[in-house]
Length: 367
Image (cartoon, rainbow, N blue to C red; front, side, top):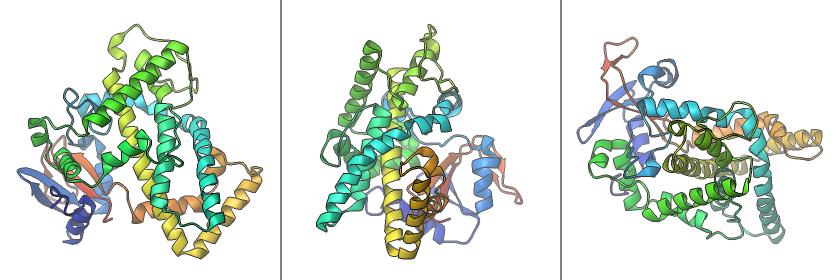
């Protein structure tokens, strides 16, 4: 039913989770064994304590025939390890703090839209509005491009983003093959995205690289950090956004590798953030007392910062953070965490051995 788009993957995983009280159990996707883990302590072991046994995700990746599949969340083994080491410095708190102004700039259009809606008493479909806002943010931070999908909801970024994640039969088949039967996906040389989207991403990335290198343009965004990685083979831990190109081509990031990271930043950023904000706003609307407490905290913190939003101000809004965390717990945008056992592993306190190559599904939606 997942293949035919008759049932969402989230619903299916919740059904499996609730079908038993066992700590773990097995299912098959055709001939592929999958271990479903329900016990929180075992989940913690797999994801943290014994991570060295489960660092691969076991999902489909084919960098030759499907270049955008070669991103950090799909690569395995040494390829994943090396790329992770290179990308880690791009997400330091200092880097994120310097990118924060982009969120503020994109928020101006959102605030204007909501003020008009409030003054006219218009209904607002928050799910779509949040997706348009996060699309603006990701387009700016990841691609270095300023768009306004709040005023113009059919701009290419928004159109292709909606198409990419639409609950269609084709997308359901792609997802099921990529995550559940990757060997079959490899056999048929599956394309995880439409050619229209792939061409668009590759074109935007190439244009951004050429423009910045030709005119010496610098922005404090993800593209700038990837450009540093592409041209030097590393991203410095210091907060300097300047760099000098390396002569060692073996260390550099290729165009396809570059585009794949931008692609996953886009799909993992705009949809998950929009979903989380939408559910958080929904629950706050249902619970006016909690909403009032959140509003009071925001007012108090902003008064301390002269009414200006900042990275540091947001960090002080602890109750708001709790509300967002609770929304993530209740409505996880990623319903399942995927891991693959890379070395035979004995489950603590049992005689059960997880064999190398066994796929692990951790249903966050049920925990």
